[in-house]
Image (cartoon, rainbow, N blue to C red; front, side, top):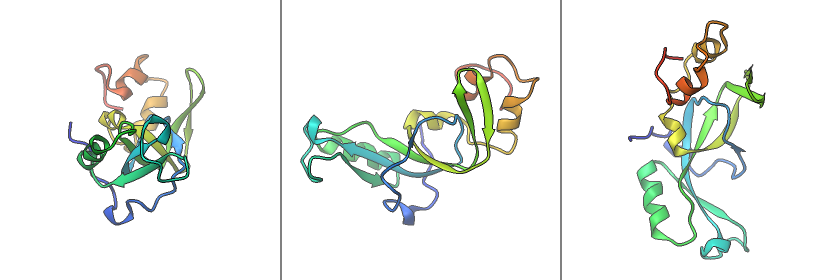
Length: 144
């Protein structure tokens, strides 16, 4: 799959290392691709025993960086969510209208980018019962 390009290549590497992990179901922009290394997994210790990452502008660059050195993890995407779907309780969804930055498994980017109607359509009483599978790309149905 061709993964999206980053929103602003000049900012790659400037984002905080700490980010939310997964969640939200929808994405707006890819900020950077990251490869994390862990000395506990055999990576060179460059951060006093702490894990560290390399920020990339493309998924392909992240894959190359991952393959180059021991102790690396699968590449992740750092994404911006301008709005997202919260699910604190399984099956109970809430539209959150605030920005957050999260690290996602890159495969999640196969989901469509959020449009102004994605979340309202998902939360609509008329949404199909398999709406979450549709959003995840696991089932056919109307575009959310």
